[in-house]
Every structure is written in structure tokens, then in C-alpha cells.
Length: 242
Image (tube, rainbow, N blue to C red; front, side, top):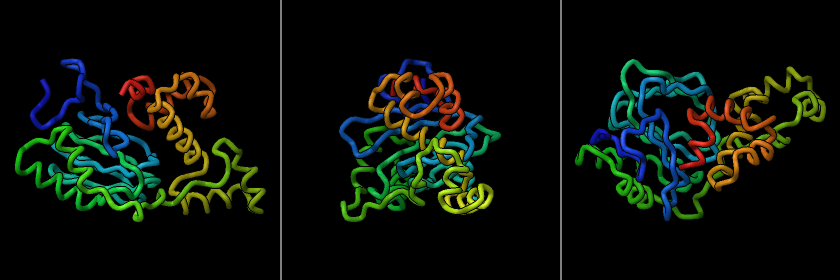
């Protein structure tokens, strides 16, 4: 049975457990919800097209953003704006937390975290209904929407770095250094993650995994699977099933 602190995914199989679990609540402004539970919660640097809000229920979660480590204790949250490269570290004790992914700039993240904290302190748990209500209560006006932090590179994600550098009148090394300063990671890593975020969107829409791999420029379904799990902690099949 799930811990009282840990809201199990609706309709999930009894006793089922993976470190990461994703699903999409119908009729909500939330793009998707994620539940994280375990010790091996480390992920390499990656980014999302959506704003990410992580709220920790148990244990401590540490995120690496740029050169800084942000430690999030139980009852606290962290807002990671869309397009912001970030990674996470493994922990010595079990971590239980929830991730909310919402359209960039659509919600007042700081106020939402404060409301989640108050609810958690008052009730000792957070259910999925509570989450969707609180998220929708903190929706901003349409005029406050903002694009992803840092934006995307103008070139196609699978275009060779050397080609882009030549068009910009720069050496490959100079272009790569400038790109990393601006986007927080080298060009190849950034463009790979662009493709993986495109894959997330297509998988959420229910597209077949093989078709998603072909459309997003991966060699085959296995290639997509390896890259996807390394970046997001779950297989494309498990993610799509959400």
C-alpha cells in the first residue's frame, strides 16, 4: 500500500513501484504530473519545454542548476523555469516528491509552492485532486505568459555543429563555447534534449514509439529508448502509458 504521504497514480496496479511515474490529469491546466520515489533519483543535465515545480514530501532532493546545488527539504518546493538546464543527485535516504509540469509562465509558481506547503502542513498529505485544484487556483492571466527561458537554437536540432558555426562565421570551438555560455550545455547535448522533448510531446499524444523515434531523428526505437530513459528516468513505453 502507498504511504499516506505518497499519492499513488490513479488506477495504478497495487504494489507497482518505479522511481519515476508520469501521467496526465484530464481537464486540468497541468501538462503532466510526475511522482518520484527512491534513492537513485539522479538525472543528468536536461531541460523541459514546460515549467517544472518539484515539491518534496519526504527526504531531501538536490538539483544542480548551473554551478549551484539547490537542496529542497520536506514541505518545500523548487520552481525550474521552462528551458532551464538542470540535473539531480542521488540521495542517501529515500526521496518522495511530486513534479508538476505546466505551460511556461502560466502559473504563479512561488505562490503555488507556498499554498502546497500550507496544505501539506495542515493535512500531512497531498492528493491528486488537491493538486489540480491548487494549480488551477494559481493560474495567471493569459497576458503574463512567457516563453521558455533562454529560447531554442535557431538551427535544426540534428544539424551538424560545424555547419552552424560556418554559417555564423565562427570556428566550431568558438561557436560551442558561446553556445554553452548562453544555453548552459554544449550544442549536441542541447539539440538531443530538444528532440527528446519533441518525443515527450508526441508520446503524450499517443503516437507509436517507433514512429516517434523516426520523426524525432533517432536511429530506431531502441536508440530513442536509451536516450529517453537516461534523460527522464523512465522508458518511452512507460511514459506513453501515462
